[in-house]
Amino acid sequence: MVTVLFAFLSVESVTFFTAEYSILATNFSKWIVSIVCAAGLFWVAGATQLTWADQSRSLPGTLVSSDALSVWTAEAGAISTVWRMQDQVPRIPASTVKLITALLALETWSPDHRFHTDVHLQSTERGWELVVKGYGDPFLVSETLATLAARLTERLKQKGIGRIERLVLDDGYFDVAPETVPGLSQTDNPYDALPTALMANFNTLKVRREDGRIRSGEPQTPLTALAASIASERLPADQAVGRINLGQRPERSAVYFGQLLQTFLAREDVTVQSVSRRTPDSVALSENQAWSKTPFLRFENPKPLAEQVRAMLKYSTNLIAHHLILKLSAERFGPPATMASVRRYLSHALKARFGWAEVTVYEGAGLSRQNRLSARQLGQVLNAFAPWRSLLPQERTGVWAKTGTLQGVRTLAGYVCPTSCDQSVVPFVWLLNDTGPLDARWQFAQRFRRALQTGDQALAASTP
Image (tube, rainbow, N blue to C red; front, side, top):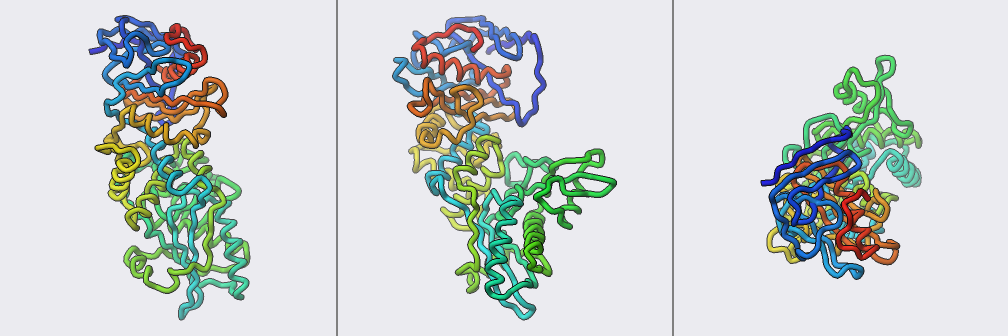
């Protein structure tokens, strides 16, 4: 049992989804250690002895161990030993799971890959219909839809078509029930948006209330009828401006996409009379129709996969992570992708890639508290991800890393650059399944970097 006593000199207010911190542990021979960090002074008293890969040396910086902490660092030429503690113990990894999602996506598709959306044109008794089939592109934002509308208009005018009787939305590539998505809550918050195969603006609305009326909150996004209705329902009465999600009804996501495209087509002088969503049953039947074989227009997103991954890692965007792993599972096992097929895909892919005997990763965003990874396993992922390390955010000098936070979980995994990041980087992993002092995990990363620079195995317990 480890007893932790905190004497705060100052307290920093944190937001659950943005403040991510962890705890460091120190020399295994110490019973009482003082920790100095930016948020204040922490006194930690304990009676647990650490088990190190090399007990003649300590981890850099001030570390107090508990059974909840795992540390792993790769070997580096500047230092003859590595710092590892309980690195084979499975832990809840939180958002560091996004490193797995990023790696599998980049290795499967390549950094320059661009996701596509197909548009089919068919003639009916009532007139021309457009069918938009989505494949889960997570980055269809307003500006991209405006470009899609312009290119579609060019093709339609080549055929002399200026009027579309019906715009049909086919989102059958995913079949994700809200209750199957770990960590998804029924709130208005953007991070609780539902993954759908056809979506616009990450299934969110930026709106404002002015003179009792709902208006668009951003110039590039027109306010559609559905958006106004949803905002009237979901934007709190005392809130003038906000970004909210569309709710957890997939049909709303498809229709909102369609109404935005309808508006952008109207600006190009193409009239769309109605917008509707194709039902799952008719989606299955439509796969055998002639129009589904060769699209009238295949639209490729101008943002390549590498940039989508960069955004996911920088902002820890759960929706992008869900979409990438759903798309991977659909390509592996066929559509529609479900959270069950995601679990199956992750098990197959990680066993094949790393030879893991057992895989306990159930989704690609890191929201599930059932996920388990050891620090050593994450180290394997980092070794494989090294060619794309520049896609990680650099929040401290010489440290490129992905954070992870859930209630009672503080994690950090990435690379330190002893000198130039163009020459060499050294992976490290920090997994704490407990609460801890602010900024301590970053102190560990910075002290590890200093140790690599100086060759000093046991740095002083001063702040970096």
